[in-house]
Image 1 (tube, rainbow, N blue to C red):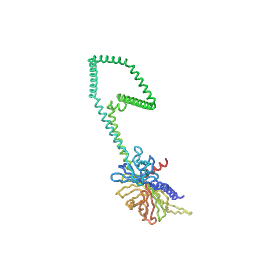
Image 2: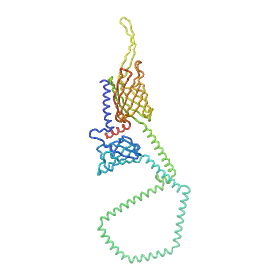
Image 3: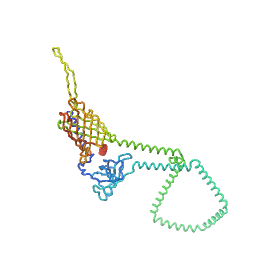
Image 4: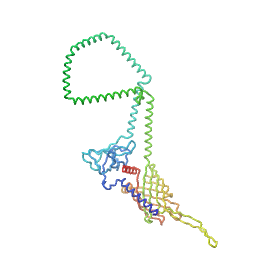
Length: 494
């Protein structure tokens, strides 16, 4: 098999694999999937949620976010769902995330199955889950409250003023006990009279006790009859009372242990109450956490500014029966600057010229010398390594290696029938022989979908032997599409 045939076979396999990915990325209905079920959802905010984000029910992926639009001061999402999903009246949606720093997705609550089904195109109620910033804000408020409480306790029982307050409490207790002693001494006669009254009461009780005992026996018999009739209910009630008393005892024991530890300075709260150093350390820790969160947000923000576009394209040269394929990526480090790396097979290969001084010696001893020049053309992969800069919103200039030779390029985009149309001009290979001009290429690319484009143009118009009309197409993906494809692959493996 020739090198050109091997390259063609490799590219055919790559195009088949990429076609499968296109069907997955674009959610093209195939087989039993039929038409997608589309509904809308209105949210006050969808911060962090991007197009192509997952839509799930009970954690299972059942669709994606097809579009995000602004409706007044709210966000309006168009959701593309599996046609087998059933949504009922009362269904709602919520923006949430996988873990603390995971990707955002839309979780749908399908509603009560007993209620009627929703018609396609219906609008769901949307809600946004509390964000990490909300949690941090609440934690900061709690920290401020704890700080105020500790400062109040320190001001109440700490320092010279606290010692003075405790001394005053002890003095008051001493005065109270002395007053009680004097009060008992002054009312000794009343105490004796009370004792005499209690003696008379006990005598009366001794005489009346048999009669009271008879009545109590009668009452006991009556209660026994009532208990017998309601024994089961009484047992249940007693069991509940016993369980309640056990729980109250456990709670009292736990509270006693907690207050004992706090009083002895054990645990975090005990240290907060009894140690000023712990309070200062806690404040320093809260400040460090706040600074760390700010640094983390800054780092994540810097990473999210990078964008990656991956592309595969192929084109045929009609006049020469040659073709060109390229695969690579553009890394956008800012909104205006990017770096392009591509591998490309060269349609005409690389021509290498060698010059050799040859001397021939004849049988009669004479010699003849001459210079022999040979040219050899080999198939070889080339490299596109360029730096691009967006001069205007629709115009980009590129410079670097084009097919392993120095060159420059200019891209200008317009919209035709509400689709992007990009005009491309490239000039490279300026070191050609003197009888050949630099390699020029004019090309137009029209995107028939967000990821698929068709191309046509004119290749090498200044060299008649290689001048040819070109036509072809290609596919591009953004980093969001790659993330979505990996998510589909992971779901298939699971």
